[in-house]
Amino acid sequence: MQITILGSGTSTGVPQIGCTCNVCLSKDPHDKRLRCSGLVDVDGVRILIDCGPDFREQMIRLNDFRPIDGVLITHEHYDHVGGLDDLRPFSVFRDIPVYAESYTADHLRKRMSYCFVEHQYPGIPDVSLVEVKPFESFYIRSSLGSAVEVMPFRVMHGKLPILGYRIGDMAWITDMLTLPEESYNYLQDLNCLMMNALRITPHSTHQSLSEALAQVKRIAPTDTYFLHMCHQIGLHEKVNATLPPHVHLGFDGLRVTL
Image (cartoon, rainbow, N blue to C red):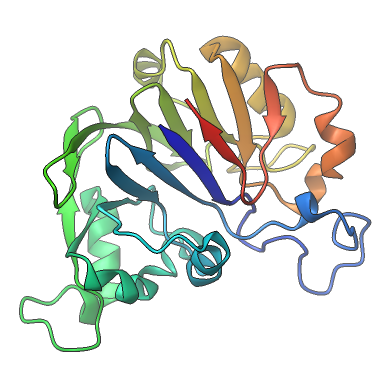
């Protein structure tokens, strides 16, 4: 399995428009963060996790134009779904199923109704919505017949229920403030945890760095990479040096192989 962090930033990205803090002015490429998204390649299946407004730029940077076999949506906020229309070039390979729970799927149908019509017309992405439920696994299949099991689990984004996903020994969690007790049962024996850590100080709907470290201690994965960070997380080089050996700040373009 290979996990690629396409974007490690929060909804505003880093640098944040108009900001002159030391992080936004940093020349270190690790401090340049596009909106949060990831790509998982496993057993011949390629899975995109969230598809934000920076998706086009992320795929141009990646320079690896191959089929996307499925898109996992964590929730309906713009920074996680604003790039769905940019899946159009990938429609040359196959139709692309977009997996989301019913609440999120309803929002996508309203927001991007032209993408999810029964009778498609030329020029729109060839995508279809597939509704999933937390704690009920499903399979994503490639056009060549390979299949990968995905387990969605419940995450609380403040008071908003959203989804995290486990694929094999990797779990992806974004925009989390808390986890219901039941979800911990699906996070045992992880080799890799990709998880949000917004900033140093507390936030009403996202966990802070200290709260994220507390979750790492409880979940106890082999390695953890933090995501969905804003400029208030601090400079990558300095903050990364303070973390335990098995915990790292993620960055755009990072590839992790399991």
